[in-house]
Image (cartoon, rainbow, N blue to C red):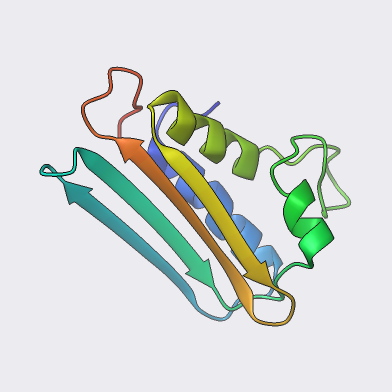
Length: 114
């Protein structure tokens, strides 16, 4: 697992670049009132089918041909959940992908933003 949330973000952005995205939006929101830190990464890349989307959180699945595992999405999901937060990924083939991780801001298990 990465030591900072920013490294998770970088890894997801690299996935977007690999998916031929020409637009990548990163939104980071901190809400003290809701005790949350949310990160949303949205791209207009090639997107994923339903079956690819289900596999995206599997650490042993990758679409790349140079590495045998794809840990970016599973690590991001695990980091959010370890803090007591949640993780969502939505995608449509030909339209792009949106990844959202919500961290509990006050959790001792939340890694630093970086």
